[in-house]
Image (cartoon, rainbow, N blue to C red):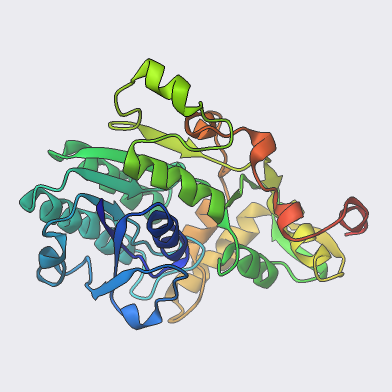
Length: 321
């Protein structure tokens, strides 16, 4: 299968391209600057910016499946302000969908976000929700993924947490009670690759004989999957784990949400400020799922990597944090 991965040189994209190539697919990673590509497998790279249709359209020719990964981080205020979320997530998806329809691409896989909603509380969540609507309305077979925060080598979740929450004594909005359900990148991309292929390959997947007996149609087309890791952790717990890995303790001081909101709102007017009111609003709701779809792909919570095990933190170290 010929697969085009937009944003293929990014954090999730680089892992996904390697996974797809390992499965025998011909993979092309598209990025604004493909010189940053770092793959373990044979992956072709091309230059393209999803916000500019003319720069991407030709790359969709003779492609069987497109995986739309291009995204801005919700953890930081983007250069250009919150409107950039709509330019990249919504309008970029619109261009990718248009190019896929133009070239009769068989399948379109969209990496969205947990809580995506056109009427959601943040620009990031609204833009992701509007992008989903574009994919669902297209004349394409599609699969949509909504993961919680993703961690792994090269990811920003742990480094961001260490910047937000300092060791020893750290003030956190609301005492850091916002909950996350971190999922390991190497396991997430296996589930996304299944969506590309229409397969189920997790550790609890049926045997080949069982699958042949059922002869089911593609199990993923038309579905939207919410995905999370094996545990739900508060921001305070994530901070404690992140610093326990560095052998440093964390003591959380609760900052009233109203005060945190005022402070971050003031940063909206500061050019180059890394956070703003949108980041404050994101801390007011949990990033967890009550309907984790991992079992669809042959996984259970027991099979997934915990943040603690990834960081090599023992129970004793975590208790001391």
